[in-house]
Image 1 (cartoon, rainbow, N blue to C red):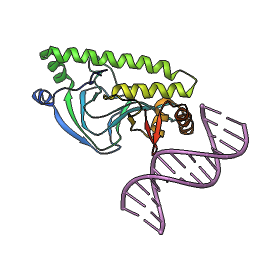
Image 2 (image 1 turned 60 degrees about the vertical axis):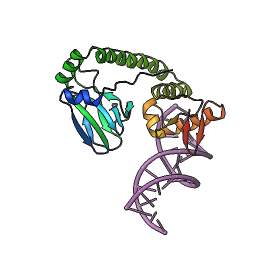
Image 3 (image 1 turned 30 degrees about the horizontal axis):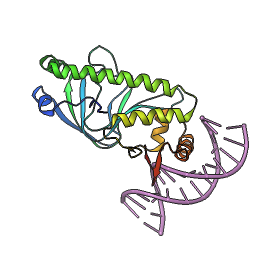
Image 4 (image 1 turned 45 degrees about the vertical axis):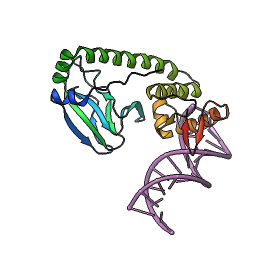
Length: 204
DNA sequence: TCATTAAATGAAG
DNA sequence: CTTCATTTAATGA
C-alpha cells in the first residue's frame, strides 16, 4: 500500500513562489492556538507536534509531524484561527510559504492542487478513523488505532518492524490515556502477539 | 559519578 | 481506568 506523502511539495517550486527557510529550536513555538493562519509549513528536518490543553491543563497531542510533511495548511483556504499550538519536539528546519503565495502556487500548478485535495481528503479520512478508535473505552483499541494510523503514514511495510518513535508519554497524550495505562496495555498487547517490544522500542 | 528523564511496577480507589 | 509512590534503566554532562 502506497501512502500519499502528505503534503510534500518540491522545495524548488516553493522557493520560486517566495518561500523561505526557517529554523526553530527544540520546544520553540511555531504558532499558538488563536493565531491567524498565515503560512504553509513544510518540514525539512525535525519533528513537531500539534497540541492543545484541556480545562485541567492536561496536554492532548493531535498529531506529530515529521520530515517532508506539511502542517498549518488546512486553514489556508478559509479565514479561521488555529485551534491548536504547533511546537517543536526537536530542533527543526522548515520551509515557510505565505498564505497568498501558497494559493497562487496552487493556481499555477493544478497537479499540486489536486495532490493537496488528496492530502486533505486523507487527513479527513484518518481523523474519522481515529475518532472512532479514540472514543473506545478499551485502551487496546485506542492504542491500535493510533499505531495503525502511524504505520499507514509511514511508508515501508513489514510485519511488526515499524518502529514507533514516540515516548510512552507522547502516546498517552495522543490517546488520552495515562502513561501507566499505556505501558501496561502495550505489554499486554505484546503478550498477545500484536506487537513487539525490543529494548523498549515498540515495533508494530 | 551525579543528575535528569523515561519506563516499569505495585498498591489502592 | 486513574492516582500516587517507588524502583529500575538509560542518557548525558
